[in-house]
Image (cartoon, rainbow, N blue to C red; front, side):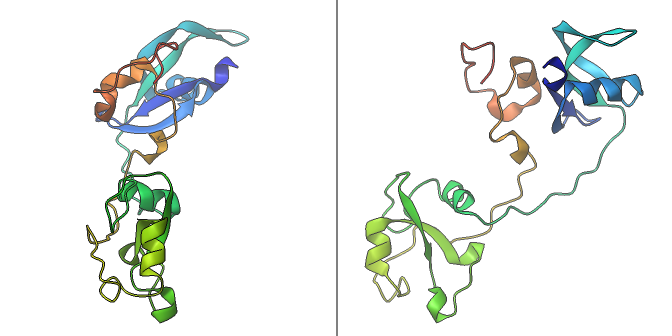
Length: 180
C-alpha cells in the first residue's frame, strides 16, 4: 500500500531522526511541521487532493533526542566483538557468550563481564577465569557507545536517502529498485 511507503525524517539540522510511513509524513507536511526534501514520482490521492509521495522530509523545528544505552544481547555482544573469539581471534558466526568472571563465582551479566568466544575456547576456559585457564583476552570488554542510528540496522535504504546517511556512502546500490 502506498501509504505504508517508508519516508526518512530528518531533524532541522538534517540529521536522520526516524523512518515513518507516507501517511504520517503527509500529515506532518500538511500541518506545516515539515518540508519535503525528496519526492517520489508517485502520488498519494485523498478524496479532495493529490500529494506527491515524499521520500525524505525535514522537520521545521529541532528535536532533541536523548541517546539511549544499548541493550545487552547476544547479537550486540557479537557485533561489539566483531564476530570474533576474544581469546583466539578466530572470526566466525558460530560463537558463544563467555562470562570473564564466571557467574558461579560472582561475575555479573554485564557488558564488562561478557565476551564472545568460539566453542573450543569456551570449553577450554570452562568455569575458570582467563588467568587461571592461561588464556588472554584480546580486548577488554566494555559497554559500546550509544548508537543513535540503530533504527536503520535492518531496514532497506532508498537511493534518495543516501545523501543524508553518510555511513552508507561507500556501499554500492543494489540492482533492485535503488535499494540497499
